[in-house]
Image 1 (tube, rainbow, N blue to C red):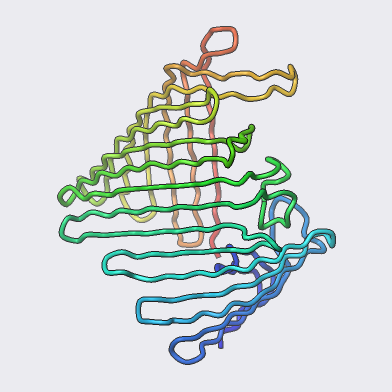
Image 2 (cartoon, one colour):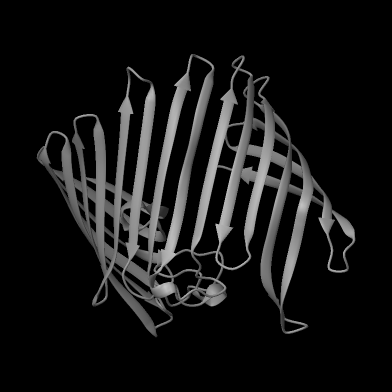
Length: 322
């Protein structure tokens, strides 16, 4: 048996972050159980009266196949509570790896997730696909089940799909790309629940172990007038294990619609031929410590009065790993 106490993530329970205790026990070669209980951790709201706990049982039904049944409960503010059941299946069918997950939230069949991955060693080709379906509207649920409710409101039912390809071209070149899309049920789109389609492609080159170069193109098309298309170039240099330096530039054409809380009107932000440049540095002198900085300049952004503007941003971050 393995017992862990303190701050931890429970991967099986949607990466639930807890100050608590978990216990894992293997039962022979094919069975294992998990139990956990504690006070949730969040950096965006109070959790003074919250608690969460649950259990899971796993079964290896054949050498390449495994199943897991999970239940956990999250009580929030003594006013809201959520009960989630989840069934996961993993298996390999020849060169294809598959994963299926079905969840029940309270008395609703909540969502279905299907993943598949295929790799052909002879062709040096990898294919990945994903399909997700949210079956009912997520409203003011407990925090882990709709964490963005206070900012974005209800989450409408939707279909989501993704397909990606990665092709190795020799020893130093790769070509990757994909398409991702979401369709809201019944066409009931609003500011935070929209149909969208995203396409991207990247050509990457690694001339040495220290250098990584890439050229990318992408296109976003969302409901209404929201859209983005761009072409980007990036170069990264890693002279040693402590330093990483990057520089990049891009040309973008985008329009997004937003609601102005001052004028109470729908407004549009346009950049028909904006140019973006960035520099990034990361220094990690020790495994438990890292310091990074990123400076970005966006030029030729169209303003509301028809002129042009320039935006500059600088972000620094200190990371401590323990």
